[in-house]
Picture 1 (cartoon, rainbow, N blue to C red):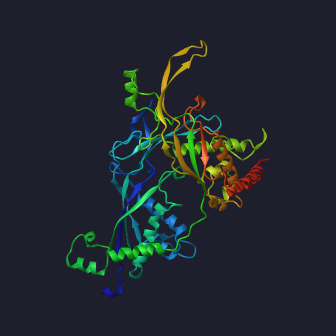
Picture 2: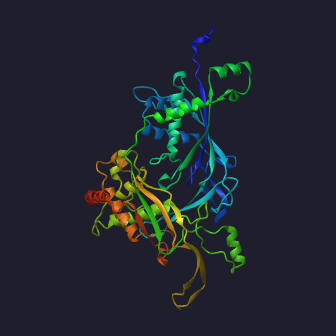
Picture 3: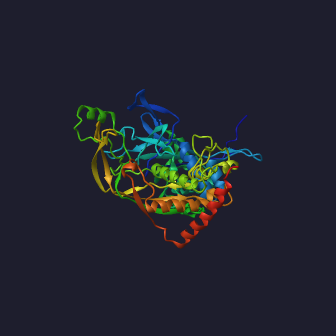
Length: 506
């Protein structure tokens, strides 16, 4: 049977090329753990959660980029018809789902960092370093047993090549391409930027989008290719200048909605004494220390960022704030009362995983605000940048023998730390997302106000050695004297007392 060629409609193709540059550390789990030859314990090399790799270099899976873009576009861009054409739509009881017209290719490593890069276990070939994370036992304040883990992380300053390919109806080609360009601009959105990967609440995954080129394969280009066979990718033509202007105007005209802006406060943390987030020594450094005990290698040294400045990780800030929040919540009740204001992880009253929003109210208040099993934290910590490193110093320590009162034999050590550094960043609370789960989440504003007060007054310490006076700090908060902010906090405190009483268990 002959096929009627005229019945087939030609759909023009397009290719969008560009780069995603990391502005903060990025971790996207691959589901694999690999042994690290330099990090060892008594039983052998430590296993590290691996970043996805193409050969020896990292890449960002296309599914990661597509999912983040679709979620952001669903919230911010109004044209649902083009959204479903580009990204696809899920099935429902009424209709069957469909795939999207756009294909998001894996983003391969394209731009490397300028050396040297003072990051722990830095691999210049893979452009990754290793982050060590430890969970803090909430009651004792010390490291939880068997809760040390490692992640292979891409630092700020690395670029990935992005390529998006697709086809569109001839009459809506420019509208669909402009829609994707509008979504890509979400990476640089000033208020609600797209974040990639894991641990985005602790300032990971901030990217910068740079468009390199836009290509089209229209009917004329296709006919020229048929007359002069060559690889199909060579048949695509560069977008004309007029087309680029038209796409830019269309992307600007895409109707956007700005969701309720999270409550965001700008915080400047000034340390009053020494500050240290420890970067454990490498095996080579330990061997050098053993060979030459008089060397200037410190026993403990500060963790540095990619610029060689002292680093205050967002996870460290969030962990300290959570510990303080749990102490506050537990003091709302008299001793002996059983409550669900703050659970104890690892114990019988620990919050159980929830499967959907209907289980939200079974979470304690601490888990609702800082995240719990099945619930992503609505509290976001930006990357705190060092605006003044202070002075780098080395301090000598000698442990005292508890019986003799003299120096303990072999217990001399030293610490290299920064004296009185200063950091600046933001803390945000997404109240709107909490409103989707509970009727009145204003209690979280009251708890946040108490935390900011304690931070401002120097009741929260960060980093290692708080018992030695390390990590003590005060903070300045930009909206602290704002009348509207103070009113919200006062109302939130009253709501916090009522909500905490509701969480009492019989």
